[in-house]
Each structure stands twice: as C-alpha cells, then as structure tokens.
Image (cartoon, rainbow, N blue to C red; front, top):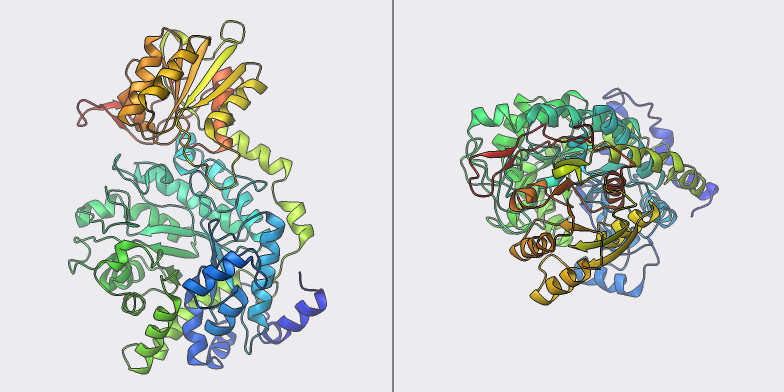
Length: 594
C-alpha cells in the first residue's frame, strides 16, 4: 500500500485545485477547469470503465498478465491506465480482482496511485456488481445479504435501507465507490432467464419503494448506487448476454409498470442509471437497443424523467448490444444516444480508438464528450475521490464483515423466508421425531464468496440446530442412478430436505420418488419460487430465493422452528397445468400460527 507521503504527493495537484465539499453542481467551475486542461485522448479515456485481470495493479499473477495481454494489450492495470487513461475499472471475481477485502483494498489503492501519478491524473471510479443474492463479486468475509426478491418477500423498506447502508460502507472501505445495484426491473415474466430473483418482485409500487430505500442506503453508506436496466428488463424470455430481447409493452403499460421504479430512483437522488440491451418498439421503433437509442436515453430518461446523473451502459461485450452494429460503432452510437460511461467493451483498443476517431472526424464533438465527463467528475467529487482516493487496512478491519453487520444480514434473512405449503403442520420439524435428516438436491455453483455447496450449507446449519443431517448432492439434472441412490438413502432418514433450482423434469422425478418413500419431504426453492407449482404432492415447501449461505441458514432456522416464516410472495405463482390461473397470489405466505 502506498505510504502517506506518496499519497499526498500524488493527490496534491488535483486536491489543491479541487477542494470539493459536495453539493450537486456548486463546483462545476473547478470541474470545467480540470476538463479544459485534459487532452482529447484523456477525455476519451474518462468515458470508459474497463475490466482488468489480476489481484494487484502492478504485480498480477502470470496467468492474469497473459489474459491482459491477450484481451487488452497491456500487462497490468497500471499499464492500462497509463495507455488509455480510463476513468473507471470494474471488478470481477473471474478476473481475480476480489480474493479478500484487504487484497481488494490494496488493488484499489494501486489503481488510484497508477492514475494519480499520470500527468493531470484523476482518481478512478472503481465499480462492481454487488447486488447480493445470486450476483455478488465480493464474498466472505464481507457481509452478504439476501437478494432482491428475498427482500421483496420481506417487504420492509427499513431492511432494504439497512442492506444498502451496510453494503455501501463495506464497499467503500475496500475502495469500490460505484455499485451496479439495485435492480429496478419489475419481474412480470416467470420465464425471465436473466432477471428473476434479481428483481424485488412483480408489483411496480412495491419494487419502487424498495429501490428507493436501497438507493438511500447505498448512497448514505458512501457509494454510488446504480438503478438498472433502463427502460426495464423484467418482461423478457431472452437473456441479453446471449441474445437480443424485445419488450412488447405499450407505452401506457411502460408508464404504469417499468417506469415506476426508475422514477422512484430518480426522486431518491440516484447517482447512476444503467441501460438495457433490449429493443422496446413502443419507445423507439428503430430496432436499436435502448443502450444506443437517443429517443429512449435522451428523449425519455433525460428529457421526460428529468435525469441529469451518470448513465452507464450495461457491458458492451453482451450479445444484445452487438447484434446490429460492430464493436467500433457501438461506443460511438451509445455516446450519441446520451450515455456517459462505456462499460467493458470486448476490445478497449477498438472502442477507444473508435470514439477518438469519431471526434477527429466530426461525428462527435469534443463538447459532447465534455458533457459526459462533467457528469462523471461531479460523481467522483460527490464521492470524495478527489480528497480521499485511498483506503486503509484499519478501515477494512473496522468495517468489513463485522459481527454487527453479519447479525443484521441474518436478521433480515429471517424476515424473508416464505412458507408456501405445510400440510398437517409438518414444519417446524421436531428434533425428537425427525432427528435424522437427509439433505439432497441441486448444487449450483455457489454465488461468489459463499461456502457452498447449498446441500452442505443446509446440512451443516441443521446439524448445528440439533439435528443429524447428511448431505447428498444430486445436481440440477439428476440421473436415474442418482435418484435411486437418494431414494435408498432416504430409507434411513426421519425426513428429507430437498433443494430445487429452476426445477427440471429430472428434479421433479427425484422429489416425486422421495415423496413416494413415505418419508416426510420438505422442499426448499433455492432460486425461483415458481418451482412449487410443479410439485403438488410435497407436504412442505419453502421459498429461500437464493442459495447463498445467509438465506440457506435462515431457511434452516425456519425448518427447525428457531425462526418463524415471515416472508410473503412478491410475485404470483401460476398453476403448472394452467398458467392463466394463479396458484399462489402476491402476498401469500403461511405462518406457524395457522
């Protein structure tokens, strides 16, 4: 970590010219002065937020150096900053940026030092996707909370605000100042493959309230929140990572549904909004994705909704934005549409040079770049990056994963677990009559930084609660032999716990054969709650909304009777045999009192 003397030397020039105290546009004169001294190349760089491999800004592992050379043409984050003067860097687990909180803090400090030591160096806005639930980049020992749909099941804005505040404090402590959360999409399509449990629910008003609460929490905790994915990604059966979704809502329906949470986020003072790589013909019939749509981003978001904060694209490496135009045209068209930050292009060199050439050729004006750079610098100023770009190890120790933060996460999780079926009051299980438990089911790859796999986490939690639980993973598509092995093991158990994950025919066969043994079966939906419709014979069913440790431990406490089921469905569950009919409505949830 740089010494205090190094820190002061690196930041002295910028800090002296920009003593930012925080209010919205009060310091624009100083920011304009900074912009006026930037070269065109530096301006282009400020618009990009790029991935980079490695745990260190200057000394990554050789495999990460090789990956950087292959994808970016540089060896390290420091070299990327020197060559392209990027304004932001995004952290990913798969890029080996997030091993542990102290390492992340060192990486963040190394990135800031590399940027601030450049001529006219500016602090870097470090970002990540820390949605909680199934999308997290920073894992244990940081505090991990239930995901959005679980928070929707809890229904408490206070809990959403607490989540944001604590998560924001921990991210800021490790040098991450922009979080791509909360998801503001209203999930009205049970078949949505990309949003689902990442959404707070299907009711626009409820989603809006929780979005606004999380925004207040995050930004009160010291990080920029990001509402995504504008103009709304909740009603699609196509994943924009791999295809080009089309939203068929009318303009009237968009106003009543998709727009509501984004309006709430803007009223709450949201720092940034992320675009969606979707076609939305009712808002723009050109066939362009929203990310590249001037009518949507400038006409509606800037004009009608009055938003003047930072607009960031979703990843430019996703198929949804690359379908119609080449990688050299996408960043230019995004800027022309009204975007400020260009996130994670497939080739930084191609994208950076395309924007530079567009200005040199007159397709983009330098004044247009200055508009976006001003918004980005305003955000950096508001976050205190000009005054305090570095973080400390003592701050990490004092803030990240504290007992109070972990207890808060457990408490919130207990208020989200939803009991959907409880025939003959099977739950809570009695330790005397159902002491020996078999835990089977899907074991999807654990969300970042959880101990997983879920069958093991559930078994361990139940054992700690006084049961004798054995884990037998059966996977998301168990074979006939695997099903037979689980059924045989069930003969020696007093009850069976089975985790379902976006239930498949093979999972359904497993559960039905376990029920046929006569042993009591408790099913836990560890992702989408819609699974329950496929299993009418199961005597007890819980929705946990994710397979992260905090949600699984809460489900275990509900199974054991150490906590009461308090969650209520934030989405409707349709009947499997007639999807036009609702099996369990929004707000449904059983308690142990009835």
